[in-house]
Length: 156
Image (cartoon, rainbow, N blue to C red; front, side):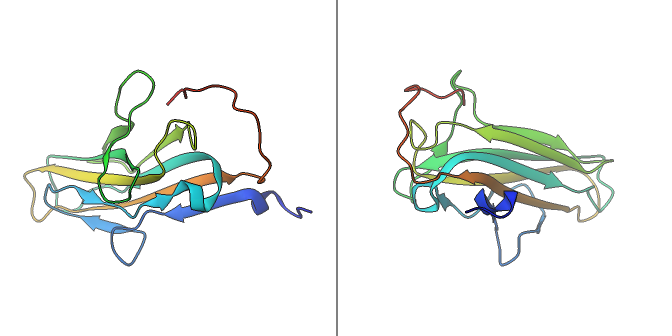
């Protein structure tokens, strides 16, 4: 018996260090933790990425994020939607904090077992610019009941 609507919600921060919020500097991509969608028992999944206003007075600052997938949790490739477009976005955080959301479909159908988020900051000038960013997976747990497959392809 379920006593509140959150009994069926899965939430995991995609940490790139020991904390969920990470200060991004430079221009190197930062890989988040992977999640095992089979072990978590996920039926559906959403990605949430938030980036705060950049410090250090850069004239331009962005955070690009993308979803990657792997079947063995060691070799990751960019995850694409059904049009072949990489799932992700670029957030302009020079003057305002930005949230980005994406629904991930095809869990346990045509999406690979392990998923992770990759964040890549970019700055133009400034004095030691940095961006605070966080990324998380929010999912809906399956009930364990075997349901018929509705389709062999997903929308994302």
